Length: 363
Ligand code: PEP
Ligand code: MN
View 1 (cartoon, protein in one colour):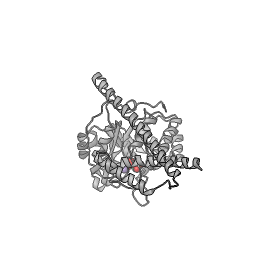
View 2: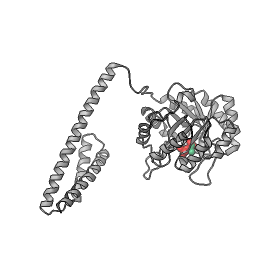
View 3: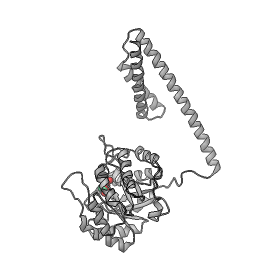
View 4: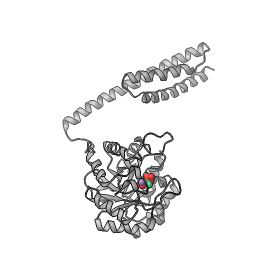
């Protein structure tokens, strides 16, 4: 899909990558916002963030100071000369935020899931020249994420970017939200010019994991990072465990390796070498497909033989043994056994299809 999206540098004024957005999870007082942001200002931050309305999964936790906090943001923005981005979840939020001169908005993960809310925001933003960053929905549904981009785009907004903050998952790993990196990559494949900002804070849930996640986002060529920083994280009213002090934030930035600077190098020997490796990959893929063809022919033969001899087609023990032994072989060959297991699950589905077709033909 080709959308006419305004390039990031046009509205951020930031020519170098990555774009850095930092600030507290929530605005807790004018002093807290000022102290945090004045320290962050000296540490190469392009845009400040702060939450005013906080969507909380469960009631009875801090839900943000709302309108009362908007003049705090307005004052600090004026004093420090760096624009703020805040979360909006309703037309009323948009109207109030614009009144207090807020320059940019993001749509939170709990709002992106709901097309009614996204449409109401798009309608409220129609004709307003303001950048909007769309967080991924809480659930791993690419269409919902793309749908939110389309709703804003159709309302005439061109300064659009997305934020990858991870997804809720049934089986928790060490992170608060599963990164599922394949989803932002798929989104980039669908809409190649959409800028993408990594939000390692909300994926991590704990400050100890910020560096590895921020590095991963940069390695995948993300355009920027949004990181939560608080002058005194341990007493933060929301997301205390994942926020870092401005000094620790700076340390984190200095530890990042900016490995990928451009998509393709202009150096001809690099291009030739890469071309050579890609040809080898093409030829390996051809062999892989030929081997799969051979395997399917063999299972077809075995199936026909079983039909002729009136033997049952599906033998659970045989498949269990295949999964077990192939994972073992994978391990010995330094391949991830789970990856091989996933491939064999697909092969199993295809074999069942093949067997069922052969059986119905033989009747
Ligand atoms: C936030 O950025 O503080 C926030 C509430 O994020 P999310 O919508 O990603 O949970
Ligand atoms: Mn937060």
